[in-house]
Amino acid sequence: MALMMSLEGFRGAAQNAEAAVLDCVLANRILSNEEILDAFGHVSVRNPENKDTFFQSRSLAPGLVTQNDILEIDLEGNVITKTEMKPYGERIIHAAILKARPDVNAVFHGHPHSIIPFSSTGIPIKPIAHFSAMFYQGVPLFDDYDVNSGMLIATPEEGERVARTLGDARAVLLRDHGCCVVGDSIQTMVMASIYLRDNAALQYQALQLGEPKYLSLEEGKRATRISESALAVERAWGYWVNRAKKAMPDLP
Image (tube, rainbow, N blue to C red; front, side, top):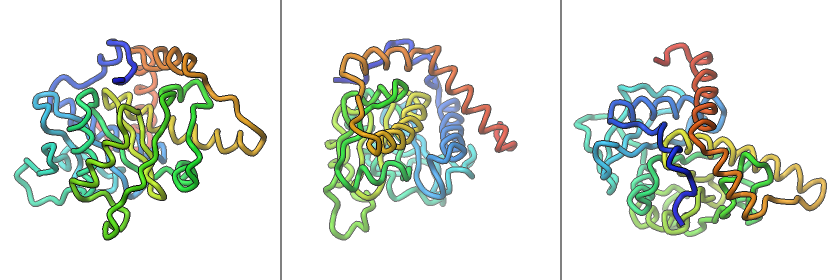
């Protein structure tokens, strides 16, 4: 099953490469400002003018990313941009997911702290709040690292295994490492990344009190159609962009 979204959810997606580069910068800054990303982690957005390439920052802390730091990379992980700038080693994750999932146009990888305990214990993350309904299909767990990888996803084979574990889901946990989150646009990817972190924290709290009553499959489907409508995505994106610009005056 592809991403469960109405067609209206695509209105916020960039229509050209220049806009996609700016969105990539904004996503880095937003996720840094919202403390989803710290010194590490990265995002990518598919090139609207060439579906076989994507945009991603050079190897840099997300909160420092500018338009001058963005590289164009193909779906094998090769840097297309003529530059001496060093890419992220884990760009392989983004290349593999975007190659395997034509419905996906943006990918996040990071290490939100509230998610790590679930990745380590194997307790599944389930939607406990209506705003995290987009995870109603479940969040699979990847635990198939290369022994010598240092728990980084840096080879095409590992990237393919992560993409295969993700399947048709919106997110995948990486055991004792972090997670990857996808969206049909960078706006929906940012929304899902923030709300996966928040859902994990709320789920942990609920588990201390008793047995949570999670969203049902039908509740999840219906709530997702509402939360990822064009109006809802525009409202959320505007809120997060405004917060980032207030905290980071250099943003255009």
